[in-house]
Image (tube, rainbow, N blue to C red):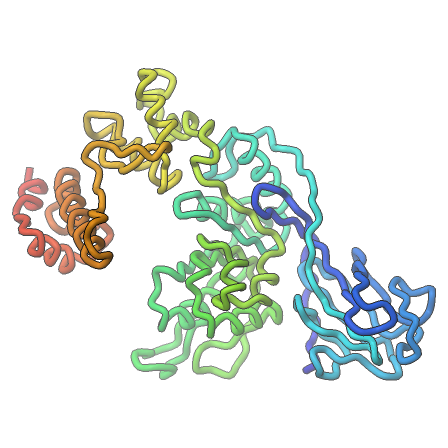
Length: 452
C-alpha cells in the first residue's frame, strides 16, 4: 500500500467554476476526535499534525503522538508521512508510512479520523490587455480574464481541465497552453475519446504489445508514451469509459503506466490537459465519472463561454475568419450586423467560422439554413420537427430531412467527385453512396462537379 513519492509538481492551483475564478484549497476535516466537524487548512508547503501545541494542527487526544504525521503540499498532490508515531496512520483503512492523498480519503491517526477534501476560495484575476492567446480571440471581459489565467497557468506543469460546449475553442486553448509552456518544443499529442471506438481507447492511451488482443500484430506506443516531454491533450474526456478511469488516475499520480498486455512499467513524462463538453461534476454525481479522477484533473479548470455569452466578440471573430481580403464587419449593412449578433450560435465559434466562409463563397450573409435566432424565432427554410408525430417517427423524419438537405448542399460545394465530397463531409465514401441511394440523389452530380 505504501506509495513512493515522485517528482514535485508545480504549485498553481487556480480554477474557474461558472463565471467566477476560484482558488483550490485542500483541507483536513475532523470526522472523529475532540472537535468533530472542524476544518483544518493545509499550508503552502508542510503541515505537521500532532498533540504538541507547536504543531501546525494541534490535536488534543491521548492516542495522537506529539508529532504524529505531516502533509507535504507538492502543488498538484499532497503527500502524507508518518513521523514515527506510536499508533501509526491508516489511509482508507490500510496502514501506510507515506502515501498520496486523494479527495474524500479518510486518514486515521490514533483514534482521530480526518477526511481529506478540496474546497474553493474566490480570487480576482485582472483581465489581460491582449485580444488573442494562441488561436483564441476575444476582447470581451470574460475572454480577457481567461487569457490572464492562461498566461499564469501555461508556463507551469499544472494539469488543466477545459470545459465548454462543442465549438467553444477547447482544442485551440489546449494547443495555446502547450505552445506557451516550457514543454512547447516537445510533442503535442491528442486523444479524442469521442472519435475512438471504446474498445480501442485503452490501446490508444497506453499502447499494447504483440498478442495483447486479436489484431495486435506488434508493439504499439500509446499516447502517454508518445507525448514524452510534451503535452497530452485528452479531448471529450466525458466519453472515457468508466472502467478505464482508475488506470488513467494511477498513471497520472504514479507517473508510470503499463502497456496493454505487458507487465513492464513505462515512465509517463507529459503535461496533461483534458477537455469535456459536459459538466463533469454532474457526471460524478450521476455515477458516470470517478470523483477522485475529477479532483485530480481539476487542479486548474477553465470554462470557455459559449459565443452567445460574449456577443461583443463577434465582430472581431468575423473579421479574423473573413481574412485580409474579405468583407469587414463594420462595413456590413445594419440589418446584416443584427443578424450576426442576434443569431443563437448553437455551434459557437466553429459555426461562426463556417458561416463566414460560406458567406464568402455564396451570395447572402452565410446564415441561411440556420434554425433559430437568439430570440428563438424560426428562420425561413429551417428544418423543424413534426411535434404531432410519435417521438421516434418525428425524429426519423427530421433526420431524413436533414440528411437530404445536407447532401444537396454538399454537392453544391464539393469538388473532386464522390471522393472529394466524402473528404469534405468527413465520412466514408461507401457510406456516402448509401446515403445518396437512400434519398434518391444522383451521385453523378458529384462527378460532374468534380470534372468541370
